[in-house]
Length: 290
Length: 85
Image 1 (cartoon, rainbow over the protein chains, first blue to last red):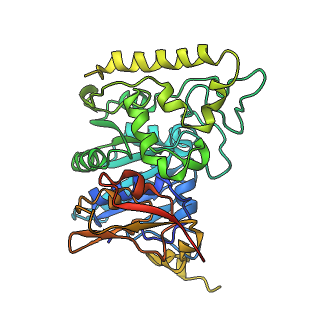
Image 2 (cartoon, chains in turn blue, purple):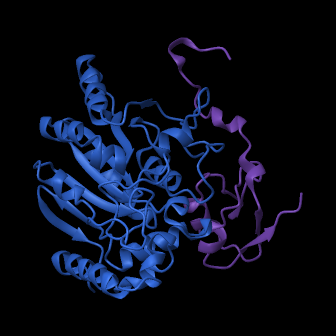
């Protein structure tokens, strides 16, 4: 039996639900989950119901990592010696924007918590507003593409690098398209003592604009174009990368409504070239090419 | 509605909400083509595709008909057909 029950309110093809299944398959039942406000909270716990089959607590957007720190310290204070792990599962809004202060505090104080960000690259449950994790040129409701705009005009924030800058033992990225990779990394992370940070790329059919059956395909394309590189950092050093046979970024962009303007609007070609340069830089920096 | 102490929700209680009514297309599993790899089960957002005697099948009470299972099945053993209600 899966540890996230059916009947949850995720959209058909929801990437976040797939992420949670992969994460909980790796942790097993012996886990306490803390989640901020966000899609995952909204879809999994419409009061008085809960989809969770493990202990789960909802915090505010800004204090997930602080609540998890408290849970971890309280368990120590109570002398609990069992193997129960404390993890956070939060969206990119609650992680890279609103919750980054408390996340930084948790990482810096050295709590034994694994923080997992499911990165769907915008505030989805409130209506697809851009976040710090929204990629360059993606159209959202607060960064719409139009006559003078190509959408979000800022690059995606490199949150794994920010987490790594705290000198924590383990940072990793993964994608819902690779459940075995998520499983391996979650198991590795929870076995390490101290703060760990994982970021899982999580396509969203509703927010990104693709058919609900393409969630995994879109996730795979993000990795194969080097726009979402998969790697591990241990004690500040890159220790593994997922090598790819690279595809041009158009293959990833053209299947999503949020990038549709790049293929219609004058000047779109030059923008796609900029996105390709980002992918090239990722591939070069991490040595992604086979 | 009666509040429990601490407003705690019971585990797995979303099962009361049968999301199968959302479905437009129904996945039909062909057991003859299924090789039991379990990829459909790993990717199902509802977590309702289960193995029985090395073959996989879904729970239509909850299946929202997203079609990821059919798209990802390497053997083409799952077909999406229009739901007739």
